[in-house]
Image 1: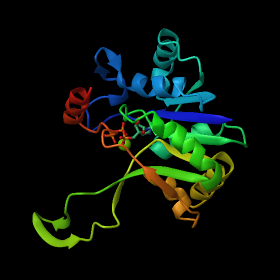
Image 2: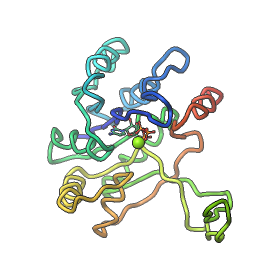
Image 3: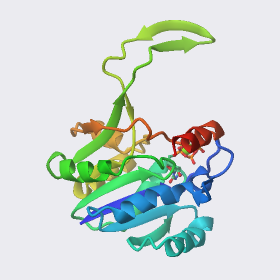
Image 4: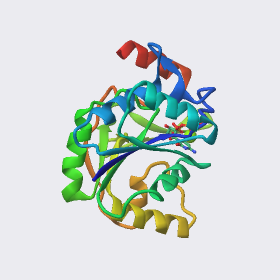
Length: 219
Ligand code: CTP
Ligand code: MG
């Protein structure tokens, strides 16, 4: 069983509104991701996590666009990690899962196939892109130093995990009251190996209004 968790419970404070529901060509941002997961032969079931007040809206979207693989639309939590945890509570103990930010509408659907193929042997697989710009540490408008970028990568979603292990590292994180900005970090901190695959250049996360314009130009 391969399950997709789509995270759409954020407030979009930097964007100014929940960006996952902003419109691109008359379609909400989240529907671009849902379409790809719904069509992917490797995905059996989709769980959408959203704000309590948006559950009925997302359920209506599922109907309108015939996203028949959506089995559940559930309420998220305060932090991204709390939203994932809410979904973990309704996952079976066996199988594989991919976790995706609804705010990334432009990932290439090949990632889904590649990710689920690799995760069966590697257990934790994430898409990354090498950083090409020079990276500097800056404080109070002054450069402190240049960071060696040869081992630095941007991290994207969808990320892929064996469900059994994911539940284990989540349990440990909550025991320790540990919060991270992505799921792979919870594997790293307990010394489980996380493997990388090539991400996509166009797979940018919408953070502010300008990103939405960049994405519109990509389409
Ligand atoms: N997310 C979530 N639950 C939260 C916070 C975030 O499901 N409590 C989701 C967002 O909807 C988004 C993804 O996680 O798809 C990445 O989060 P981020 O880009 O930080 O989105 P927001 O938290 O909405 O934006 P901001 O941090 O500017 O408020
Ligand atoms: Mg956030």
